[in-house]
Length: 314
Length: 312
Image (cartoon, rainbow over all chains, first blue to last red; front, side, top):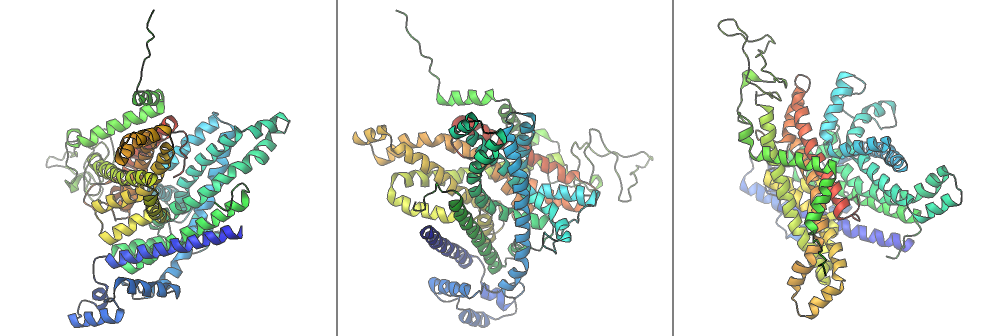
């Protein structure tokens, strides 16, 4: 077990290194001269050249990459070309909002998606199953920015139940709860639909297995068959899916943040793209990618702990 | 002695038959075909120009009849004889510049579909090559699949955004971004399939009679991988169309005044109280297209490749 975790941690370090390489490489290749942007419009060529030299921009690629990695280890993500502030400080303010939104959406996805999937698997081909699968089909086909705007239009503007946007509190506070409901539905709705379809098919597969027939044959009550025998085994394939869909959530978070005017990392990144603030774009991508890898790692470890059939060695 | 006739039916014909036996899939296919015909022949299906502005006719709601022109004060516009003036007929209404929304939807579909097809085509070609060669040559496998692993560890939309941020916001870059994002999955699916095909005896037999590597890869292994490629491409089209619309909505895909479904929704945001149809109509266009591709993808998977998992 420890060996497995150590191996996964080592793999993770390699992955993160790979990502820093992609991120730094794209910064290096990006059009535009950072020294020129930093020096401002009135700078002379000598000023720019001096700045280039002092920033080390004339050094070879790998020297610069090494310096970038060293900076990362010291928590230095560089300076924003727009505000001239350290990017780390700017991200620190915004990242919690993104985490908040992601947790809220994951809760929506799990609470709505998994039970619906299980119920429609148990009552296969019933009216309920038909409604649930159709809803899920729509769920994966509705763009989340559009769903978000529609939710704002109906529940915030027409009915006035929720604010139209913004995020100031964590989801477990009363104000925070009101703020997060609409964005979480907009973002989590699609994932809920994916979870519904997956838990339905996982449950159907388990229900057809031999040991379920045996359990029924020996007279176990149907409820116990479903919840004790089937559900636990259907849950394991779902756990890995939580991990892979976390990436989709992060991507969708950018859109949801934009629709609901939430001051999160995604919105920060999109604004940085508009003004070609490359270091900020790179840092945001790096933070997103590393959190994705971390979540995948945690999910994999949980998976191994829960399912004893998985061998740690492979 | 009477001859026993064996009716031979091709795999392709058989699959199409199975597909058409499914009512929902048939409807989806017909809707998509109609949509593609309308989009390709756009000028035949509308008298208007997608970019032509007509400020007198701004924000007209969808209707089945001609609507009276309304001034900025909300009063109907009258002509010299004191009669109410009517706007041209706009089935799905007009936007804030008085452009016909139906026209913009069908012209916008050209962008969504062509970027979608181009991106999937490109991603598929590269991914399939990578998968086939990785399965055949272990040395290629070691390098190529590690690169795919790193690409996999990057959430797709992030990769797309990084590419667009670096190369600039243009449709070509968006196409490139979406195609790169599809490569690793195509590579993995094809590699898995090709690895199991490679174990078959007939591959060993062909090899022993002296067939070259390329011949084995493309003529004997590749055709066996087509089913999962078709299934995944169809599913992926839905994602691609959604991505183009999302990136355009965020302002980093198609740029105004180009009509594209995502940009149309974004433009409608400022008018969502006065003219909700500016948001609803392009949204419905996206949903119909996505639904069709998703339904087709689901049914094709059940027919061609029941083992392919739901999640990519």
